[in-house]
Amino acid sequence: MIWIVTDSAQETKDAKDKGLVVVKLPVLVNGEVPQEEITDEQFYLLLDSESVSLTTSQFSPAAFADLFEELLKNPEDEVVAVLLSSTLSGTYNSARLAAMEFDGRVHLVDSNNACLSQTALVQEALRLRDQEMNAAEIADALEQAKKEVKLFALVPTLKYLKKGGRISAARATIGELAGIKPIVTIDENGEVGVAAQTRGIKKAIRQIVSLVEEEGLDLNRPIVLGYSGLDDANVHALITELESALGTDLSHVEPCSLSQVLGVHVGPGAAGIGFFTKK
Image 1: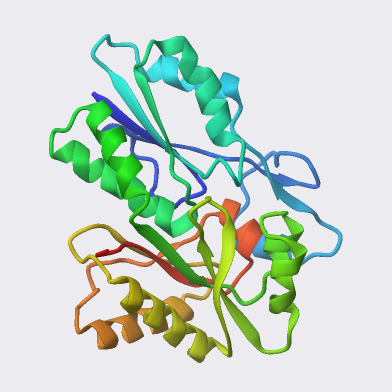
Image 2: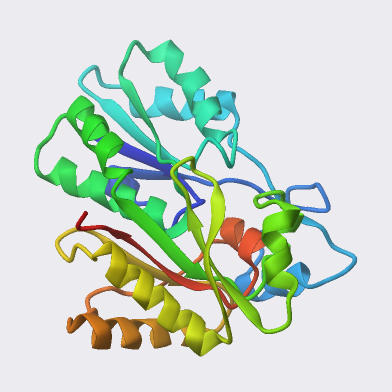
């Protein structure tokens, strides 16, 4: 078995029966792990509360070591781990430290991505495994693939990314201007950046479509659409605009709700796309 391992900074769901394991990055409430699972409704209420601090944490080396030991019980088993950009989190480094104990049977890929573009890479890993590539071949292919994947997302405000230290105060300044809606991306260094800026949600959605057209959307590889918060209207508006501009049907792409790990950093109302370019 070739196990695909990833983390909850992306949207593919855990499916251990299919050889996919998603490690859950902790969301801390006032510095503590909640005793009970928080619903999305509760989560977004807490996110807007002045008296509550929501932060995220990384998966520890010891936790990764325990997971790898569990998955590698059989001598023929291997792991391909596709993880959140090491620029944004220490999760990849935790996995690297743990992998040293397993004699090359754990193949690590620093995705240089997060969110919907990381999800696209995970789906690509599953696709390559279905093509009967071995673990080393999958990891090598993903090293190239991560240079070909893009994320563009409308984020109503950059205050959450600024608060969590995922974007600089200078970059966040634009998000504080009245009516300005930034389009965020992940750059070649695996950092969050602003790809464009415009006024209003509708114009921001059209700007995403323009950026996708400029890059070229590869319809033969994974496409991931997603939104944050409890309202998916923005992502459906994005789908409509994409279908019209590209002359294609995206009904096979089911929009996903961003995980709470991502919700901490983008807040409600975000909508975006992760995809492979034709370049």
